[in-house]
Amino acid sequence: MSRKLLETDGPEWVRRGVISEAQHEQLLALYPAEANAIGLLPLLGSLLVLLSALSVVAANWQRLPELLRLGLLLATLVAAYAGGEYFRRRGNTNLGMGLVALGLVVFGASIVLTSQLYQLIGYDLTGLVAWAVAGMGLTWLYRSRLLFLLTVVISGIVQGYNTGQLGAFSYLTAAGTALGLGLYWWRRPDALLGGVLAGGLLWQAALLINHLHVKITWFFIPAMLVYALGDWQADRPAGRALQGPPLAAAFLFTLGLALFGESDFYAGQLRAALLPYLAALGTVLALSLVGKQRRGRLSGATDWLLLLPGFYFTGGLPLAIATLVVLYAYSGSVLLRAHQEQNPDRVTLGTVLFVLTTAVAYFKLTWGFFDKSLFFLLGGLLLLGLSWWLQRRAARTLAAANAATATAASAAPKP
Image (cartoon, rainbow, N blue to C red; front, side, top):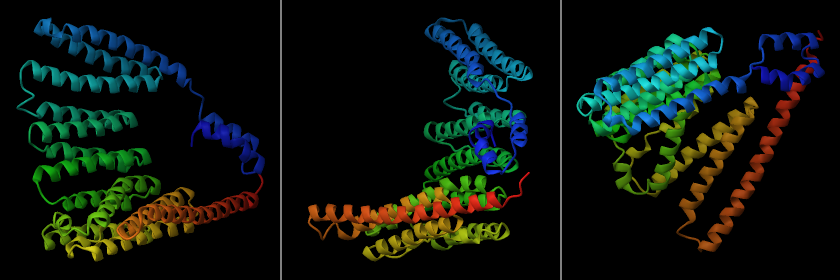
């Protein structure tokens, strides 16, 4: 809960009798107003001054003595961290953490510039890995969402440079991101951090698959491990956010199979060794199902429809049609669960997935048979009609959810 929510929705809660006026005032007192705009001015001013100084230094960097370069880097680093700690202790947390984050960025820049100075960065990745490790340490030390997000980005950059420029994969960086930041998120579940962490882990998994030159379907083993972790998380919003990127990747993959699965060559590019792949996928599936069962979420097992390994069958139109059936089953299950939970956001998601699947099916099954003008006319009418019907269903679900909320509020005892 935030003060902004209390200020905007609180009066309505009082009017409905959910809370009293006195309780509203007590809740507001728990979330004191912060002068965020005013607090940002010093940070913006400091950044402008820093950028001015950096532009001057950058223009003359090659002409500066070596010791002066190192001294400038060290002084900037110390000033950023010291300034951040100073403002934190004075109660200006936003400005303080902004300066600490700036110090982390300066630390990485210092590693790069020092390595270039001594011609080390083209041969050794230790310094860049140290940058990611430093970000993880600072995240735990300050328990900062900003540092968490920045460290995920830094780890991705470090891994991208390692694989792209040095031809090596840093398992230490990957393990640090998964274990160090993963454990932090597990103990402090957060929807935003979960989504960003999952995206960062999937990026590193993709880099690993590319580095090892194996079939791209192996990507879904670590991806669905991330998904399975979300099944074990007690905080449902945070767990669902962690599962979002793996599900998005699986849906897009299955959509691609529906579009191009008719070509056996395309499907052949996906076929990993059958027994090892199915064994690995089955292990992750079992881990996911146990987590769902323990958290009472077995209805979410339909998410695994997207991982059906249909590409092991011979390519052709039957494979494309079978994949479309899977997409319909998945999007339909999302819609069904959303209506049962009376969740407007998931109703919208299910509607988009269902309409997208219908568009792909229509294109796939009728493009070669209809005159193009008739193709677009019928397709447009089909999607408009489907959209209208799904919107009516969504409106009914939303109305039912609002009615249930109003009934619960009126039945609540008056303070």
